[in-house]
Image 1: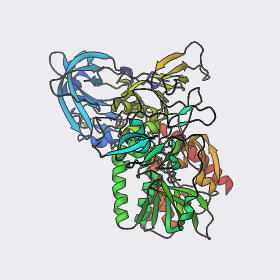
Image 2: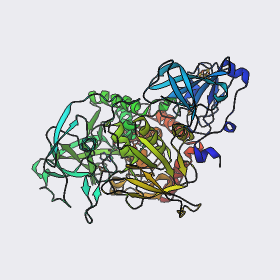
Image 3: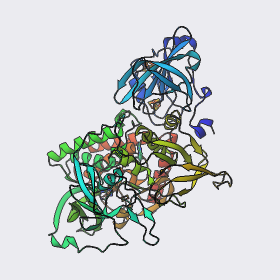
Length: 154
Length: 485
Ligand SMILES: Cc1cc2nc3c(=O)[nH]c(=O)nc-3n(C[C@H](O)[C@H](O)[C@H](O)COP(=O)(O)OP(=O)(O)OC[C@H]3O[C@@H](n4cnc5c(N)ncnc54)[C@H](O)[C@@H]3O)c2cc1C
Ligand code: SF4
Ligand code: SF4
Ligand code: FES
């Protein structure tokens, strides 16, 4: 039995992670680890960066093909896709799907939360995009938190 | 209690409606059910238990359990959870068993409707059956006891899984809208006759090659009786919520997940302020997340099994909002004077027995049960269809072949009433039943090719590890069927 099957919380060991160079370009981190019948992420990527053999297979991101555009984030019904981009000065941009009110505005300060909803840091909102009824919120955080921040509280 | 702002649903400002509850003047909105309007006014006690006078609230919220019965304009036993709110109506709680009013049907002439195909229930399965059969050329009568079509779909605000064909990434509520539009189009072309607020109440013997049903249409709060004569029928009646045994399970505030979902996502009324969710299958996880979106706190999710049963992605969404999920935990009792005031949860050992000393008291005003569904099959057994108890399907189900036909000629089944599964598969089963029934009646617009395509889609959806339960259920059904024939 995997720990996340009990807790609902993934650890980094459960994920396939990109290298630093790929992170500098910005890539999608897909936190979808079970064989569920689902594949809209594959169709959503304009760069053919997500592949899947069969609808019940796991989505695999080709970190070299992925350009970090974030198109796949809002179609994923599991809200399981995030985009992480390492930028200068020890900072990173993290794009997160968001379906709550109030929706933050650019330059707002919000609380960044980890996979268990625990407070990580106060971060600044850099971009807010609405796709259908899912918002994609991009925040600026410290690079060492980039693989932990997975939610925001406004 | 009304939800003011919602991230997904646009609750439009509606016309105010005045009504009376036990002589008290209250206000609701157009589009409310009587129950949702009462609830929004803070009324939680709907009836009293017959023997001990215990307060009771509603439970299922979808017309299936009878715990919301009240007298409306003098008419007893109205299921207030599916009865529309109207201006100036007088709603009263009933004392004990109310006297039945005089047999109202007798005052009217019996009306007879004759069609090729009767579809019972307008959830995703029934809507798809009707659309497909009408496209094949069959005349269709679609009956549903709710105020509008859609079944469980109209409350599913989350995006669906699956592939493009099943509209993956689209929200359940949007899929329901699309299907509704299609039905409307076919209604205008006189290919589908839709009767809402109507219940199929019984099966009667018909002439050879015909099936005969009684249908009650509610007009105001009294009823009109119809006789329906059809050549084929699809039962897509959905399912009923399961109950759990524990002290206090009848207190107002203990609700089925479907009721909670209906109240908040259809009527825009919050079920409470703080909820304990019981069950970490997909339904429990999804409804918990929807509660958060409606601005309701979720204390935690307890799950008796050692692992989370629903998809990890649903669990992860909840966890990162700070909602804990306790596996190997259950609810021991719920307490409160007139309504839920709190609950006691307890840890379970590997044999699912409570471990003494691990009890924990939780403050909450709502306990939501998401512990599975049981297929609605009463009409099927009345029609003489062979039934078997299949745990993986959720209880007794009608034996049926790949084309969804039961052991009685021209009687079909689809969706949750053929075995508990999900909306995506319910839609495909509905399509298969609709096309197959029409084909057998002699309508054929490329029917065989369509059937092949739908059967393949169904297999593909069920082929992963999460499709194991329905796969086993359907295999067992096939085996029983082979034994019988
Ligand atoms: C809380 C919850 C969350 C869910 N989330 C998902 C999800 O994310 N994805 C997914 O794929 N599935 C989901 N499901 C499952 C999905 O909703 C059901 O599998 C699906 O709705 C079943 O469709 P159906 O047409 O068989 O039945 P239903 O949608 O239940 O429709 C049955 C209809 O029949 C009517 N009816 C019954 N008997 C009669 C009668 N005698 N006369 C007239 N009308 C009658 C009922 O009023 C009802 O409208 C969820 C279910 C629940 C309860
Ligand atoms: S971020 Fe853009 S390029 Fe990368 S996988 Fe998603 S859609 Fe494709
Ligand atoms: S769309 Fe989301 S949930 Fe579906 S397979 Fe892709 S990542 Fe997983
Ligand atoms: S029938 Fe109305 S609550 Fe169950």
